[in-house]
Image (cartoon, rainbow, N blue to C red):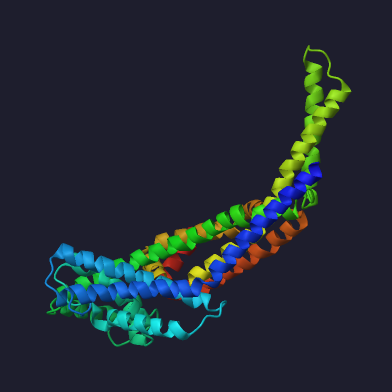
Length: 428
């Protein structure tokens, strides 16, 4: 009877998984067509606004006499549709790598989309502003244009960072920079240039922080939901049903120790109480029930450990996809980190370097590495081999320490000699 019930339950779960897999396969196979259709509809929405509100011209205050709030409304619609087009085109490009689609309608839709968004990808997309809030959303398009330029001059426009090493002239470079800064302050377009740089810098910072948050949140959510709703149900109900209670010997030893402790505790409590003595049969029954409870608990742990491995793979894939579709945002994030690092004082730089090196390769770091490796082994259901852990601790921190020292000697002495001197004083 029990076996028949289990067979029915297994068949039901198998049918549900087959149905879900069929739905997922159908959804995945239609992803490119669905993505290009949504991008096409967003482009049509932009063209409709252009024809009805801006006489067929691009959505800009140059071609319509609207108030500030009305113009902000139309620009909001434009930016939402442009963002949707960008997202769906990235989804389309990713999908066609795995799914073959017909080229009949796709090429015409792509041509229409390119025609609509082309006018918003020009150098003059941002005109001279008189009010900051009027045009701040247009900077996203300007940033994308600047990123797409491949010349050295354009890269300087993006990063705005001077080279680390420059040729030495007759006079100190700071004198020339001071005169150039004074001359730029009195230039006719000084205020406009300042406002433009401020808005561009602010938008870059926003995009960098947004990208950093996505880089953290998306893999974590992918790992959690793929484990809870895809991987773990398969392993719990099909593959590991009534078998493979323990995935390694450590789990089995832990379960046996827990059962022995329960039996000893039961006998000890029986000796302490004044109640009638519990019969050996009753003790045996309670121990058996506890064994079944422990078996169920470790069966769940084993299934969770195996599920973690596959869920982590999905998480890494999600991380790689975020990196692949956000190459422009990587430049913004790198620029933001450069500004933060170069903005620190020499004492702060030395303090951070000492803190990081002491955490990873310091005197107390082996204990941290040991806890970290044991936690990783438990997460993946692997036996925590003491020999392997000690071998890792004996080699990897040494290699890491060598890399740190080489970086300090090779780069820090050239980038910030005063920070290197401060580091030596603090380290001594």
